[in-house]
Length: 259
Image 1: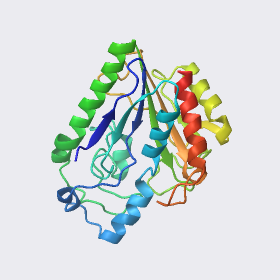
Image 2 (image 1 turned 90 degrees about the vertical axis):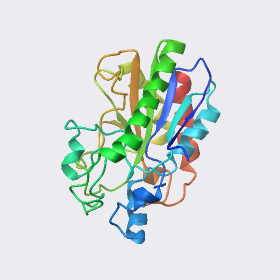
Image 3 (image 1 turned 180 degrees about the vertical axis):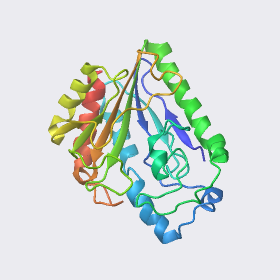
């Protein structure tokens, strides 16, 4: 099984829907390095997985007037988290949740603290980053710009691992970057998601994902993180999707069409 899929959209689309945290799959040899028993691991996956976000992106792509491209992680973020910095820049490393997690959402041990991250970085993180870089470069070459829309979800109540969980938790949180998120992109998202309730900025999660080759240097790459509060579309934690998913898919499609 490939660790990710790049799903082609319209050749003229500049939009790339990125879905990094929707999967629960963990290869057997990676599972062997995780200290949780099966029951505890399933509970952790319920909390850490952005359930149904791949389906959300797929529905939105089908509804959009111009089909966006999609980049979908097929492995759990407990294998590697492709959106973390792989070095000392990553603030989540302070709670054992850098590119290779050693702690759970409740700050229990996931892997031994001294675990060498390099084998997992080499096998999964770097190929993912290279493929995402290529996907963004492809949109730049084809259309002159790339718009990366990160599709995430987050729990209604803060989890112990959150470093900034004390702020507002609106139905839709828009994560922005001073360099890569132009005001027009933020406003387009606010307008599109207005039907889903209040939208907020950078709380409880902030920032965007841009491949490091373009990060902070190429203004043609625009980026926005869309964080959806889970009670708006699913039973928490880890339960089935509800009717809210349709409304969110229509809103995401409207955002894509506005770009």
